[in-house]
Image 1 (cartoon, rainbow, N blue to C red):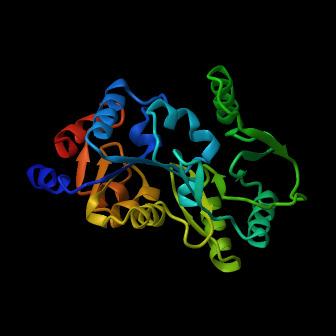
Image 2: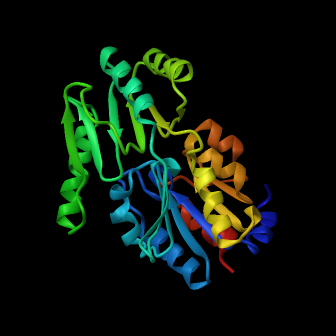
Length: 282
């Protein structure tokens, strides 16, 4: 869409929503100084701000505090919605325990990396590829005086799997990913999307970032045309299809780029600050 036309549409926007990884965050998992300043200016001009991530809520504390966010946090791809200022959880959708158990058991039997995520804890199989990443987050969180995540290693499927917001499959073998997708479609009522290469995010029916953004907009009594969203990957497309303005960073997936109204610079080249300045600031 033409930049001048987008800037005109931007005059109607009241809510701005940012994906984190690959979008607001650089490749080093940091929010740049220019992005922080741009968001600060948005708030000065009266915009409401939300972040929408596939991460669990506890893993977002550092980032929403960095931008002094008082509005909304969407976590686990839309399973949870929190209003930070009021400390109110306005949505929490968990997986059916029976279906979750089916998927976890299938993955363990087929030697497929399966991470089980609740609001505050992450369960990993022994020798998980991704365990180090979460331990590193905890190290940073403790240094900053923030809440660490409960990181728990499991060796079998004999757990009381309740309160699960998301199951994350990490598998470099695409054939194994396809096997999981087929199993979910055939034997469960769960749904799935992708948030990065080699990943499959499994959620309850009705969970998506787009549905979460819609719920916030309805709560605020604003229309889709008054919402602008930023993202970079397939799990952001549901937001793109809902919002009046959808902006993708140029490092985005093919599906995200195809569904965006505007492609900004990459997450490592100040794409967020650029788009905010060119489209939203008045």
